[in-house]
Length: 429
Image (cartoon, rainbow, N blue to C red; front, side, top):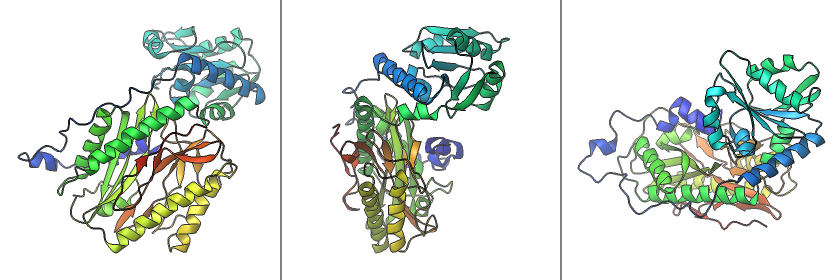
């Protein structure tokens, strides 16, 4: 379960909104959410094209040959969208995509869903339907047979559900199921220039929304008030798939929130973690403010986190392992008296995660991860420090790897007095 799903499931993303928000209680005041100065900024970028998806399929087929796979199976989700454009959901009724090592792709979907699935399908003309009393797995098997695939290794994308594998494999006695990750990750882990542009724009949306929110913080606001303000700002700026978290005071020591409601007051630590998508590609930015004058301890912890972010960035060089980035931060924090390892006070989660079409993708900046950093990879950089019962600080900016090493999508803030940061120019070479 990724961060967005966790926030929705637990309700932490709602910040345990009270029955009546501060904005509702203080009706005589100007509403927090009224603003006409921000507008959509996404017109300069365009969606992924059918031609790009065909290029992705061709690369996947090359990787299938390299990894000795006869075909791969996808269910609705980021991977299906990545290769075909299909934007659909999962249910007990199977919709699947088959990509063979040679030949055209095919789609399997319920008969009554076909018109809806076709609305977003950009590549592929072979659509096989099944009726409610029929087995969709026979259609998948027939697609493979029509492409002369009846033996060898059949790859399943990592999120494909067990009932799909269990329903299909008995129909293919001469095939072996394997993970399709060498193919799907081999494509999706390395972002194209177009993908980087979309992620850059998503980060611009979120950062502009932070500026909008920061300038409108008022004593008495609830966490839900701030979250709603951020959501609305990102939407007006052109973001979709919106999400936001706002944590105040001792609630900021919980990395993904708590149901205990907090109110903004003088000296409050405000930890926000927010993002959106632009044409399917994600941003993820965290900022920590102090409302009013910070204490010496708040200032010291914020400075330590900012230094940790820079240490992570400096370690994230081409050829280094992803795990070494996490190790470098923990080494710094241990010298400063935090930890060790995941112990609190300190950094209780990984230093960062992969990002792209999904907010959390492989690989991660986490201890033991041996994958080496290469051009085209994208990560969050978010080494927080959490002090239970007091407060937490997290700064998060995403980076991408180009031929020269790590680059910022958004530059981290300079200081707690200037806590927003700035959009970095996109360096594609």
